[in-house]
Amino acid sequence: MVQKMRRNKQKLSAEECEALLKQNTSGVLALVDNDGSPYAVPLSYVYSQNKLYFHSAAEGHKIAAIQACEKASFCVIDQDQVVPQEYTTYYRSVIAFGTVRISTDEQESEAAMRLLALKYYPQDSEEHRIHTIEASKSAYEVLVFTIERMSGKQARELIKGKR
Image (cartoon, rainbow, N blue to C red):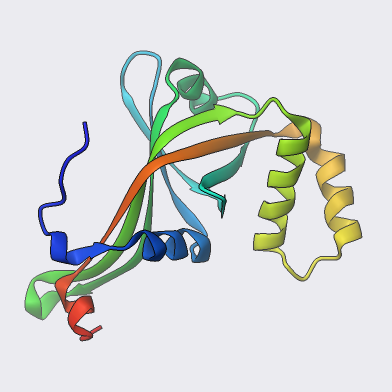
């Protein structure tokens, strides 16, 4: 069910949402596990062409939940500044909704791992990056989150430029 944003003036544009996904380094993946219970896990990620990529151990709660239900959401908090004297928080965040799957395509997985490695260690040499990915590929799975829709929101004070 798609809910309309209550405070529409605080809505971030699609371009702003995409920029937040590109510049941040972690977020929370929310899943539903095999008994219908919610499961949320913080993860590092990379965003590329309307998809989010994660790496994961080949088994565990997250993998079992993805196998049980492909629907997911992913939330990134860009800013969270508590302002006690105003009883508020100056926040900016984005949430993506879509489906997540375990990649079964070796080329897709390798490309995703290169993107992740480049994001988190851009100074590494291409040769070392390729070697490291190749040497460890039996130890991980690549998860692919396809974004169906996303929305972002920020505090009124950030719109006004108070920061």
